[in-house]
Image (spheres, one colour):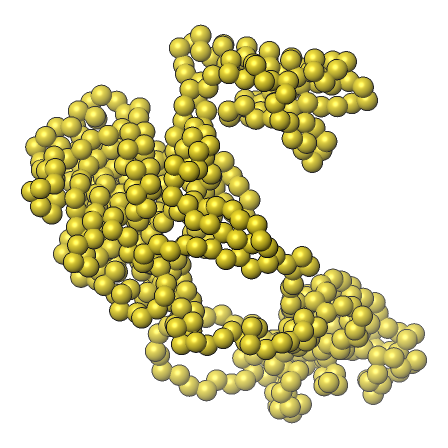
Length: 538
């Protein structure tokens, strides 16, 4: 425990607590106005007989007239992991720019809530002479798109040729459904270790998904592939099926997108079935757990059969295909990964070793052009603005989307994919100018580029170079004090001039550490503080 002195514009207090603690402290005031940096919230007490000349908070004359005030005290902290994991090593050895890349873009409905997929364009690119060129072009559309709109897409495709780099490649524009595009093109590109490229990749990946599930740490798990759910395959091993225990003591097993739970109460057991849309189907209490499991299977089977009798298929997430996990870093970047399917040996992986244990992770390289532009230029771009900034050959069209498959919409979408390819090659040229060991899909901010330069220069981070205890880090973290600042213009050269220091008068940090604040003329500039008396500086 440590006794920490604090000053808040004339309010002197001691906070007793461990380094890094955050909590509420009862403060005894020694002045007529109690101000903690908030002009609008303060309390007053009547003058006491002991007078203002008594400065110490421990003075016995003050004890009789002191006021107990409860305020939130926030301290900066140095956070450590109590059970820090060993540093992992891996054999990841992918080239900075792979031979193939898949660029795709989606067009959606105008409904801001749904923004459902209508159609999209894609291009398969190959790296030739340090530039990606088109070797296949195609379009894809929603699985449930109506026939008239599909005919409009096919009519446009028949009237135009693909823009492949050479006549040796297929000059026909391919047309796929969403599920065909995912299975043949996207998953094929992943198995080929290609770079998956899009402008605002998180959005486009979410548009080609058919379902999603929220995950931990601001992540979303997107289902790209489904298959028909066959409940009869579960019958043989139903009783021996693996059941996990939940936090509230229930048993649970997953069956496709369904889940079955067993509630235990005294010597009774009850099965409940949760449908994919989270509806709860109640079971009855049973005297044995096997009887409850059997009833759970019966409820599940009856619900599946009732849906199939209406002519609708019952689908589940395809366990033989990976799902895409998108974890938001901030408004400009996200991290992408793949879940492990049933047969991971069919997919590209790399080995990770931690504490002597080996595991394998899926190789999934997603390059968000918007993120790479931000990392290279410290500027947030739209597709229109980055084309203007890079002076690309193709520019984004001035067009208001209509949410249809009209020829204007198809031309607009195809122009966007041209722009994306141009931006990719321009950003590649800029990125290759930097002599750093960094993959473009790992450059998620300007700091990523800066850190790569530090590694290239052989500069060791201070925490690795010096042996400093967490105790000292905690002290330095608490000792730091900074005034409140609001920055409206960043990364721009502007004329500057000296400002009157009274502009920082409302902040407790600078006002407490500057000797000049002892002078009376500064107090006259701040009427709301004039009544308060400056405490001792420590």
